Image (cartoon, rainbow, N blue to C red; front, side, top):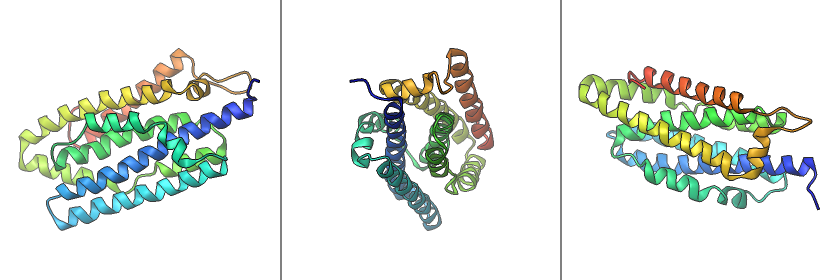
Length: 224
């Protein structure tokens, strides 16, 4: 028996929410670990506040998954291996690399999910957009990274290379998340009753992601 368009859509929404929710859980866990590398108490408190905000976002996503009749843990489990692999390949070696990953890597992921959220119903879209709001990390991270580069100019070159690596890994991760789940692929492709992305539009989307990444790197004082 063929599933109805409504059920196809529900599966796509659940998959996207599950991916973002596991991403938030991963971000929470990673920030807790990053706080251990922080050089001072002020930094530990700031990183801890970011982790707390990420967990708050996770709760909203879990609630929406439940409203859609999904098991949140099951929806998130589908993306666990992919996300865990990404984080294993991009484990920061020091505090500054952790800051760059939290700002550049998470920022790119958020941009990607905002793009896809445009194809969802208003209520689900609002939950996703609110879960991707800045947790206060932008000003803090920019200040810390710029101060670090001012003290050691060699740091800038190393972090610029790290940012480029994160860009490549994050884009691969985004493509994998969208491509591995048939429901998300169908969501992006669109249908008779709703718009989708053709190859040209998909290319423009990734061009926008690249431009936003370059802007973040510039804000940090780094070359993309």
